[in-house]
Length: 178
Image (cartoon, rainbow, N blue to C red; front, side, top):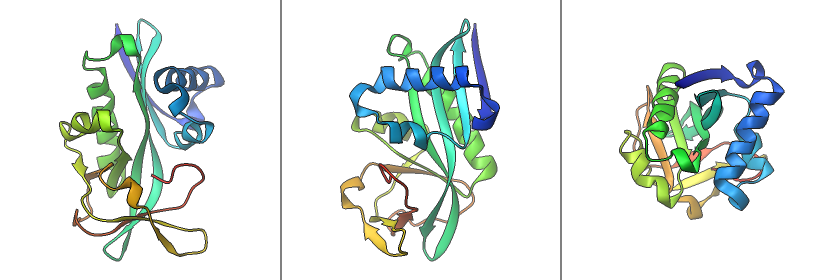
């Protein structure tokens, strides 16, 4: 039996968080860092279980992005993973459907950074590739261009008007900015 649970980080006990962390490290291996795991905390998690075993995870965390002279409440998607032996069965779609609902219900914009392998997955679920320049707001209040991320950032419009060719600036954080 497949079960989907959504819960804020604070509502999950240490065991559930430990399972989610272990799943992400299992799926992403050396590509995942402790900072990446920490980026998935502080928002809402979607946990997908099959017969009580965690097989999928995704999270949406609050961030503040800037675009076209506005600050946007952004639901940033982190830690999307399905156990390797359960991939290709629609589980990722279930997780992202839940996440999309959370984004569209609570934020002005949804955003994520995609691996090359997942680009079509996100496109097929209505996420749009950002075609304009990207930057990050430094702790000193300056915009720093992040050209290496261009082509890998996707957005899910919610309530904010967007020009996908304009500048999109994320807030600063440790580790990967996008």
